Length: 453
Image (cartoon, rainbow, N blue to C red; front, top):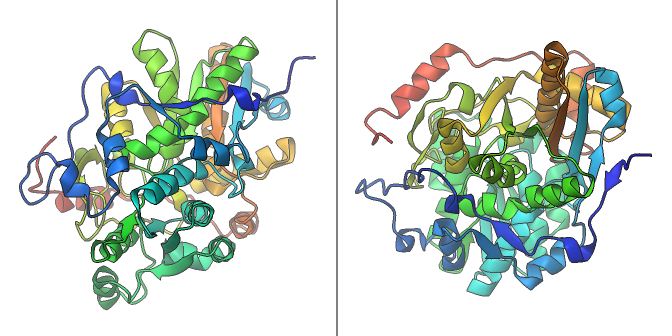
């Protein structure tokens, strides 16, 4: 019988992360200092990030060694299995072979610990005592809470208010791992107080929560900020997903025609995709697809522009696809995909034609997730449902074209603490929300006068 699950041995786990910046045909647009309009220097970022992570952020080295203490923690759940979704294939009845990288096996239940553990380690080595961050659905906040506990660091998490209310078990996970979880916007920061003054019932956004987390650390010399997506070093750490997948596919004599991942800020998608982007740059024929929600269509409808990563304009200006730093997304249940911007690396690859983006509404994503659970058993996170919807779409295309395809995707996390969202879907409470055109027009106004990439 053909192998259903492929697992590397501990000795085969990658010992290096892959840095796509070494192979890009054209370089990224640099982040800009908002006051001067000049490219940001490493010292400009020093009050926010530890210098060892800043060095990774700007590095163009192709391979970066994974430190032994990080590998030691990875081995709690890595390497993750590569599985074939035979039952789902039968349901779709299309000429496809579907493989998925099961990132839900981590202690936090998602791909997020791949960078959380790395960032906690580098902060510990640097001398940081406390890390502050934001979280949407709570997957990043819970992963960083766990990682900080492993390395003896205090952790404060600003959680987007709507997710704080929708997903209580995520914040309980954070508390269990010893972190402090604060609903955002909050009264703790000037940025939070400003939002609450304008709208006491604000559902919050990742842009607001980022502002609060950054403000929280700049006045504390022993604290540093940590981001779970978007930035170069975050995508770097996540490439262990794709690197393992390459080895596993090779073991069974397969190579994907299509590589897919859900995309909010870009870390999970970048993790599975970037090693295959390198193959594509050097001549391999592979289609690489990021799946996003129609309610927050950053790549499919947002302009490519310089914009801030947060509401209060505390970050550098980043060249990325954006819906505007003041965008407050609809409170869909896929909280990890409710971010106004997209990783500069992913945005650049979309512009270069190396990656494509597709958007799906929450009804079709939950339908895909339910069908997955009823065939493959595992209940996916609402975010993961988006890439499963993309897999369904790709299988339909293969059937229409009469062409066999091998599909590889990142199963980014389980939905066992997101069951309220499935209850809302099953009881008919969800709507197929699509972002109105006037919101796109508002986004363009928000970035008027900013430098052009």
